[in-house]
Length: 558
Image (cartoon, rainbow, N blue to C red; front, top):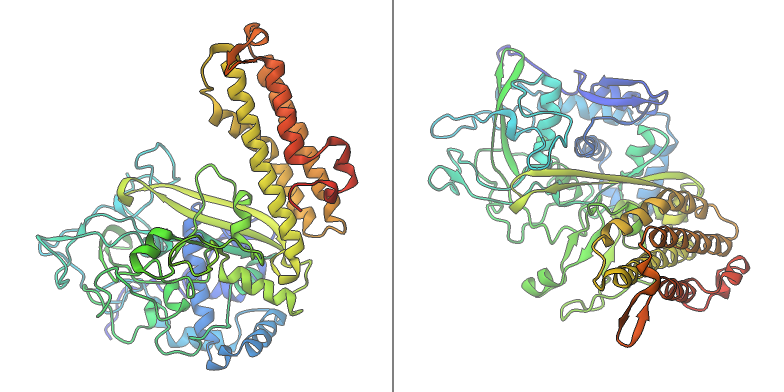
């Protein structure tokens, strides 16, 4: 091969990390893996970039240590413990693998540039500006840290956003690549968002990146050692401008295994270089993916039962469960953690299926704890990240990210009692929120005869007040000796917060709130609204006098 300009991701610094002493730095893949215990976490400004890069790193570890013996669960557990007990993940197997695939990580390789198709082009040899490559404000203001007026990128920046685009690119009309049989009139018609864009990306973080990599490494899988379950850079046949055979449309395309999904090539990409800078990009359609049939394969997202998709397929179908705007991750914990008393989906095709399923990496860490391979008290930060798209998923709108401290025990089968208490606490929190909004509606009626117009603001204020306390509460629950007492404490917190917010609402009203108005033969006044709130709180939380007697004295839900 003739000499060419090179930027190899294994050797050149391009990954932003935060060291254990909180110093930021930029490292290569080799540096990161060799010194992973020295870094807290990946530290790109966009959490979706961090998630996409983490999946590339995990793919390297999967393939470095791959073996059919890992299809046996007990052997996979012992294998995981061996890796956990070693000081570094940069062992001989990883070093040998990186040597074998070294050329595949060259961003500027003339024949197989990393994550790209070397000769990708349109009939008019068009390129696109970096606007379509870099997540930017789009519709809602200065949302992201980078702006679309950037005219060029360094190789390190280009590498980050190349990986991000492969994982998260938005839907819509794409440039029509020469050689893609699906192109009509010079256009590539929508295949949907990139695979990671569907996910409620779930990351289990330890004290450092070495632990984080291993906590998200799930070696026990039926595809272990398969020649087909490989990342995109290992595909036997080089990617072309067209889809691989069988992956032209989105129908029922299942990945060969979890490793393939980590870098699924739903787009074809090519960078244009001007000297040592990237000045333009070409993004076209790639391999379609069946996004409702990966729940037994994808390891890094929770799932929700989908009645519409099940009805359409006439079989059980799950959709990835994502973060929701304005909703803290802890409010979705009942669906994110294992649940031995799961709710069954009500559908013709459900067949007793659970309404939700946790991410496979969450289940795996729970198994590690239950089997004694991970200390039950081991602290874990459960981080979730989702991309929010604009209309018709044809633009980026926002990146949603949140995290929560839990213990390994809370994820294990033995942690079901604690999880049931957490579910009760969250359900009661939602019921108190509803009662407070009903109080606000009654106050609004007492003053004007109409319903409240600020219910969303009342809800936001309530959750803002209890957000940090709940995060502290769930961390305490993970190591609690008397969880019933903690639930009683949470009841007290809910009651006092609701009463405080109600008193603030009442105090801000005009004098007419005391006279009130008649509705269905009952005069609604400020005191009547407060009495109704007290009644609702008693029904939800029990009598205030019982709160310090423990949760089991409360009659409604344990």
